[in-house]
Image (tube, rainbow, N blue to C red; front, top):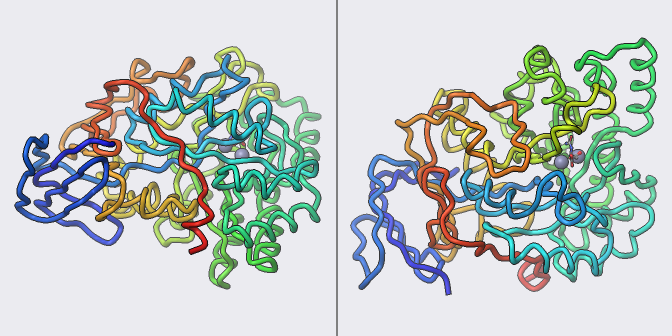
Length: 453
Ligand code: NCD
Ligand code: ZN
Ligand code: ZN
C-alpha cells in the first residue's frame, strides 16, 4: 500500500497545457481525483501548493549508477538519493556495470541487489553485443525495459555488434515493442580521428572534441535509421550532440521511422568555449561541441525532432577525471541537476514550461512502456509529482550532491526556480533537496501482458 495525500491549488503543468488552482488526490499511491475544490477524505494529509508549479515526476531514461562492480565511482544509494533530491522519481539504469547486464541471470541479480537501495523507482536496460543476441528474449521476459547498444567506444568498452546482429536486435525490438538505445558513434571513425589528432601531440581538452567529429555520429545514426525503417524496430539515439545527427533524425522521423532522439543538459548549456574553464571535467562521449551544434539541438528540442531529455548521469572518481585529456574518464553526475537546469531554462523563456514534462517525463515513459503509470498525472497513474517554486532561486552547491565525487561543471550555477517537494507514489521523499525516509523505490519490469494487450 502506498500513501495518501491531497495537493491543493496546484498550477498543473502537463504537455497538453497548464491548469490553475487544481487539487490532486493521491490514495494508496495512485492518483484518484483531479479537480477544483476536492473534498478531503478523512485523515488524508493536505499540502497547499498555491503559487507552485506541479509536474509529473521526471523519468530519467539515462543513468549509470555504477552498481554493481564500479562502486569506487559511485553507487545506487547515492545515485537514487540524488534523483529524489532532483525531482526524478523513476530512473532507467544503463547496463555497463560489472558484469555487464548481458543475460537474464545478471539482470535479475542486479535488480535484486538494487531494490533494497532504491530511493526512487527504477527500471533496467540490458546490453546487446555479438556474443549475446540469443539472450534478448530471456532478458525481456526477466523484465528489461530496453537495451543499450554501444556502436562507439566509451566507459566499459562493450564492443559494437556486427551489422547482422544490429539488424536482428531491431527485428526483436519490433517483435517485443522494446526500444533499443544507441550510443551512436562509429567506432572505426572515432579510432581513426583519435589517432590522427593524438599524433599532432595535442593535449588540450578540446582535442577530445576534435577526435570525435560529427561524422562519427552522422554515419552511425544514418545506419540505425535505415535498419529501424526496414525492421519496424524502435530506436532511441541517446546523447545527441551534433547538428548533422539532428538532420538525419529529422529526415527519418518525417518518413515515419520509429526513431526517437535524446539530448542532455550539458549539450544545451555548454560549448567548446567552456573547456577553458572546466577542462576534462566536461569531457563526455559524445563530446560537447561548438555553438552551431548547440543551436541546432535547441531548435530540435523546440520543434519536436529531439523527443527526450535525460541526464546521462555518469560519475567517475576525481583521479579518473583529472587525468590528461586522452586518459581522462568521460561523463559526470547529472541526475541531481537535470530538472533544475531545465526548469531554469523554461523560467528564462528559452523553452515553454509545458515542454519540460513532455521531454523529461511523458516521452521517456511512453518510449519505455511505462506510460501512463509513469510520466503523467492522470487518474490511475502513480502519484509521482514534483512541486516547484518558480519565484525562488537555486544555487547548485557541492554539498547538494550525494555523489561520492560531485564533479559537476554546473556547481556554482545560479538558477531560477526551486524544487520544493518530490513525491513518490504519494509519499513526500524530498523537501528542498533534503531526502526524507528510507529507500522505498520499486523495480518496474517490462510486462508482456500490458504491452501487447
Ligand atoms: C558514460 C559512462 O561513463 O558510463 N560516459 C559518457 O561519457 N557518456 C557512457 C556512455 O553513455 O557512453
Ligand atoms: Zn553512451
Ligand atoms: Zn550514458
